[in-house]
Image 1 (spheres, one colour):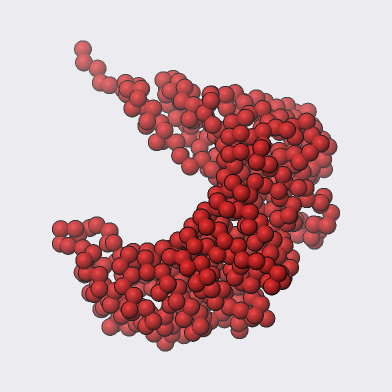
Image 2: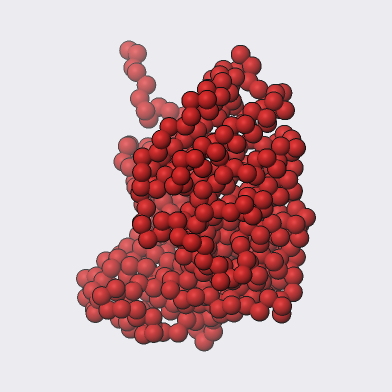
Length: 503
């Protein structure tokens, strides 16, 4: 008698591929989703459970999250036993990955206060488990106490000091202090930060490092800078001269990301005259985000040379105050000094300070200095579009996307910039007709996308002039992806177009 096939009749090879596609590939930051998906699929049937258990690549990601404990740090025996049981389960699961390199996500940021009892009953067993595995390729540590970092990566005086991490390629350390707002700033009561020491001998494969460290300075971190290809630094205190000093040792660096977030502690100013220019011959990607005041222009942008740079992103927030110089001048100086060919340019200036003609002049220079530009994003307040007139002679035949964002308080400025934008797009289309969509290609994504986004503070924005809407519709009818967008912004009135604060 004929029987209908069931889900368990799927061949092993096909089922294995289906299961791998059903579980999130990008596990970092999605540990809960990853483990939940894996558990749900194991419950489908006994066969599915067996296939998942036998696939080592579905078990090489280990996530340990220490739950909050009472503020007094007291940990009873029941809590301790639950933690031991959880570690045993994690160890058994990790063993299913066999010899496949493993990834670790360790989150102690919500744990109790660091007490002797916490170290003895919770942290010690966790650290012993981490140190018992030698083939970690990625380790992420989130904590609110620097001593946890010292336990995982001890500097000296510990039995595991000589432990090697031969396969480790990526490290992320997020040491963020949790401040009780009701009790004021308690930074002074915290233990002094420890040194982070990773030698080439113990970490021969290390290539990517992300450090988000409150109250630490770069000299406290002694890493194999010379072998890194990717470096992310966030919230680290100190002048940018220290950053330049570290970069002088990073000859193989390909990607650099810096987030300035001083959390109320101003960066110390650097003596620019005492800093030599540093060349990073392999750096292709530079991402700078400024959330607070810094001396980034004189001490950093003017002191680095990046001949291989292809992707540049610089963004600043309202609290930034630059000494003596404008940020756009610093960016233009960097590109000119580096003699690089930018392919992807993303600049977002403060939305509460009106952009000036000098800024748009610098943007025009950046575009003209980047003949192979593929993507351009520029955001600021009261963009007038003056820079478009300066780049008409640039073919920019490789350009695939341009986005102009303007936060405005004057309808005339909005329409002026929109008109300059539409006219330039028409000019670009006229010179690049070869990439226009043909009738048989309708429905496909156009190879060029142009967006002008105007956002008004506090008021409902008015419509664009009908003539501009007609021009946009005509371009769209020819198959070009052109957008004129307007939105309303709800902002803090304190930051409403204040005067430029340049010291």
